[in-house]
Length: 381
Image (cartoon, rainbow, N blue to C red; front, side):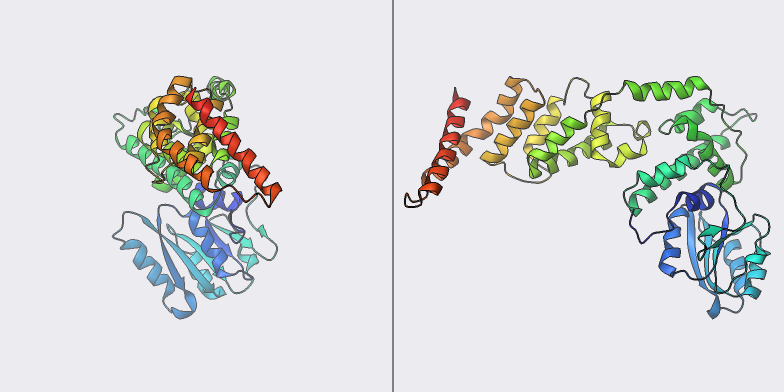
């Protein structure tokens, strides 16, 4: 995560996203840092208000919150408040906001409708995390390599909550289909299901009972991961041999995922991390190796639009052999593309031999050419 976003922490994620709390933040804060907290307001329209420029601040908040034509709710970022205006806003209900103060008002930190954070002391005044489990929040942040990926991951949770809300609206005789809820959440570790339900309850203002997660479900989830093999070594040899070939491979992996894989079956990191996606595919779709149709697409290089030269084809052959691809399949993939490249290589060998006056370079170059000629001969045998 980019260092400038120093507020992107599990604690802020917990409060603003999962607990849907309001925040009051003290001075000594650059506004760009406050704006980084917008990432936790998925599902809201952000409204920025500079309090020093507005006399009827509370009336504006009331008016915009009651007359929004958007399906999303409003979230207010109010800057440079003084004590008097803060008092007025603290009296409001049914609004979501982040307030920036220009003076210390820690004595007003009472109750839990508004959580006070003192940047100077880097601590929350009236909220304790001692008994809070932040494993999910920590995992979400750690597995998101940048701001955009974290935003996507939070949007995915919001989408799951919307689907759950829809299921609640379909309930007949108040009989909740918990199996349907579990199927919506199946891409997440079961130990985090109730945290997502908590978000759903708060965002939509509904009441969904917690799911009973027995040890069997948790053990099955853990056992499934234990049974999976690690194919990271294969992935590394693919992407380390040739940059152009690797680039095409990674793009095709994502194409295959979008066309062939149900996204609900993937964990967050498998959606965006090519190596983890490759592991998933090798465990679930390509148990006996990369399928032929994928190999055929790969060597076509349509995404990068790169014409494979002799060196590329040689690298491709090395990769396929290390992946234990059948020899006949390799010949079918490489053979037709090698004929023209052989002629080009021979011409290149004949043209690029240094003058004998520089004997060391001459010798080195000649030995390299001999190796390439021997390689050509072996391929034809």
